[in-house]
Image 1 (cartoon, helix red, strand yellow):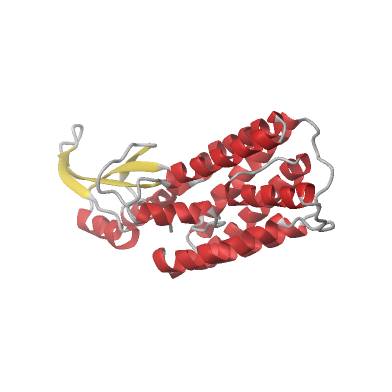
Image 2: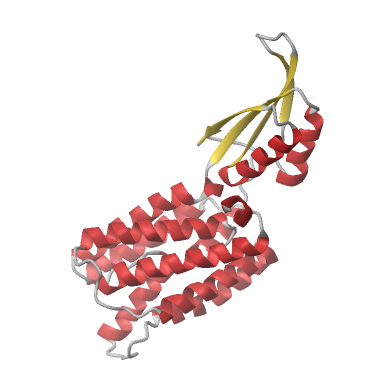
Length: 293
């Protein structure tokens, strides 16, 4: 079921929207009621909302205008995405941004489910990381700093997406430390750190893998599938089985965890007797394309 969802265009989009729902539940149930800040562009929107309400004395009733601000700020970002990242990613991002802001604004902010700050930050961070990971694994994005980071990275900037996000979050939490009580900044950092840790586990496109395939069938057929469908380079060489003494073909390919399931299905169909070893979390340098599908 998960494999089909991740490799069907519309099921992937639906799963990404479900991920935005999980993110909104995590924030509105555990973080927003405690007046903490999620980080990223939404964290800045929550900060500006606080300034307008508490310092400027403006009242917006029961509406959390952070969601509205987030949507408005993403409009120019989506225009940049369309120019530099293409229509496909921009469309999925637009759908995710719209669903994220709609759900975030529609969910009522009530009293905290858990009064303990640390517990709320951990639970909220875990749920938000799961939701964010689903969105990214399905080729979507909730916009904001992620898109800006991707654009800078694609244009050759020394800023990676991660560095860009860390720099902006550092500024946000530094301001919170100056304007509010220290606990606000400290617990917000704990939430953000927990979320990113879980996100790295869930986000399959962010996990590099290396597969070695041992087959007695035509290696060019399997190699052709890898290049044509996964768009990955493949290297193969001849080997000899020590036990049988028979010739065997060995194929080596580096790919993401997101792509490994499709590779395993293809190998099973082409050669059910093939032997496969997979190494997870390998470090890859040089000419290797990190995909955002």
